[in-house]
Image 1: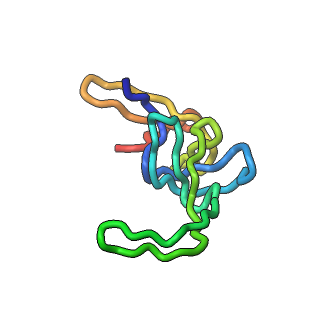
Image 2: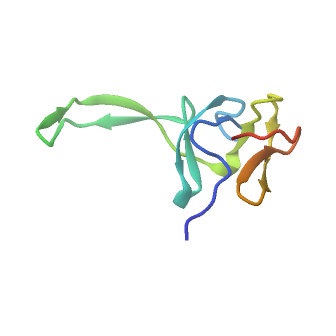
Length: 110
């Protein structure tokens, strides 16, 4: 069964615990099986890459920097209306499901 996360790609989030605490960024990818997200410019890691050939292309060697996944419990959504950290609520109508801000009760998406 697929896990449901209340954070979606494109959301503005802030890290609330860990080394990058207080850093804001946009969600690039959501990994529901691992309950994790990848946030732009947060949790940067370095990888020493060997030169490899794959699919007729050569990948250059060197040190590459990339964003590692963060667990969902370590981030909070920044409400687009009130610009505060907030929890996400779900509001169900007869035909649609909407995410709402728990602070100002504004609709986050559509």
